[in-house]
Image 1 (cartoon, helix red, strand yellow):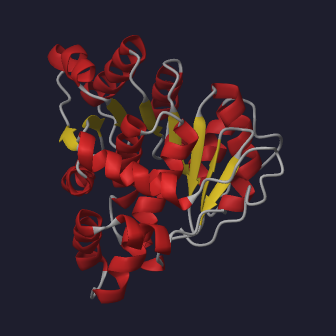
Image 2: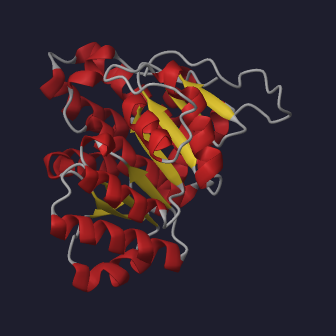
Length: 281
């Protein structure tokens, strides 16, 4: 989360996302209070739920197969994070993704550590078969996904890959999966394979907060619940998290208080401050 650079001049005949529609998205979250069903990394459940509640969404985080269809149908959007894929949790993830596809609910896939093991890669193939609306990952994860699908075009997978190095793979992955791909880092980049945007908001201390990426995935689900265009929804989520982190970092002592500060800032964020602080290109 830092500075953005893609798509600023609208050279592809598409309008640049203006600040006001994003501020309208924040108002939509608070007015509609969508139910968001999330299967996320257990270490991030409290933070992710807090972030969702702060913007007005209502989190549900069940992993019980027996109620998965019912919960997904009651939700406005679904998010799946593969951070700790035990057998039972992996089964719940696939069931949630399949239920979301069948019910026509938008859903977000967070491929945490996808290149770490054959188990994760097999799980990822099963999840991708259910056509995620948005894929959100860091540069390494996006490159690993592209490599799995034969889309990396010779790009090596580096443990310290930059967002910029992952952009061609992100665009190829978006086109191959018909998903929006968000690559998070110093600058968050969002692409549907044709349009691309950069979100320049954020603060370096955010990289020291455990579970913040997981919370952003859940926030992306909330944005999808109120914004019909998945690309705009992903930009809205990245902007909300980046702006909140940027503002909160000015008055906290360290990462622990930054996590609480982000939740508090999202809760109190008004449209004027959000619009004034935005740096989306």
